[in-house]
Length: 331
Image (cartoon, rainbow, N blue to C red; front, side, top):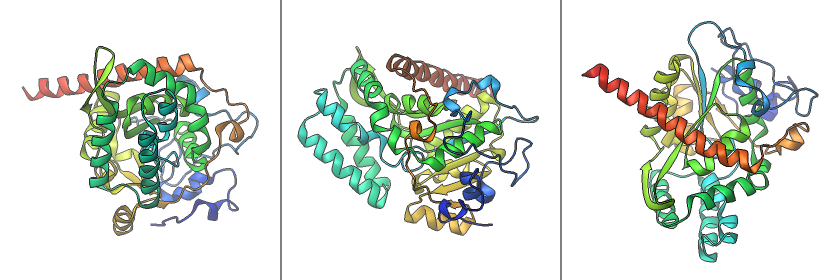
């Protein structure tokens, strides 16, 4: 099985399908489900090649047979930074954190980018962010994210990831973002990218404020369990699904599908991917969606805020239904 060390190597071979060539056998096959038949992605900036965010789900092709999905980790897989730390400056400007917290977040971002985040680092980050958010007003956080989303996130979306998302949608698959970052951050990013579902960490809320406790942590095995529950609700055949991540902590997620790929992998995941002959992809071209797709029309702040609330309710409902159904069948 081929592994790809850099998607740029394939640019000259097929300029219309960068991410498909990069993925090799782990890319997005055709809507008929055949392996290796890549759906051609629109050339960046081509006329009429609107992003998946603007394409109604009903307009997407639905291949015959079981439904399938592509599951994407977020940080260093779709975007070039940690989404949980990217908003530290606007949170500081909004009076939620102090200057020391901004500097600490910047340092954590540096460590994350240089060496990835192992289990211990992720646990420390989880504890730090949980304590940091205690008492924050939920609506204020959502409004800050909606106001600053495009300035912070739009420029750091990997062009290769955006193309791959488009290809999966064109092949009739749902796109699901699965991230350890908080839902208030991940859900608007999902709306920006046209994701069909979002699975993210949920913080406990009382009286409109965060308590500092975590209600659901989308991490490691929890991610795999969540996509299994979603697959049960949506009817996905996981053996025919795809998954992409940069971290060895996401091995359970990658193992849960039939077509896993390592993207910008940390050392441990690279070793596992090579041993298992999984495709190894390198995404290194962050690009603004509005420059990549000039006709792209960004969702308004009110839409992004509403989507964050609505997506949280829909995802919670889906997981509740799957859990209730599983308990009923085992009774």
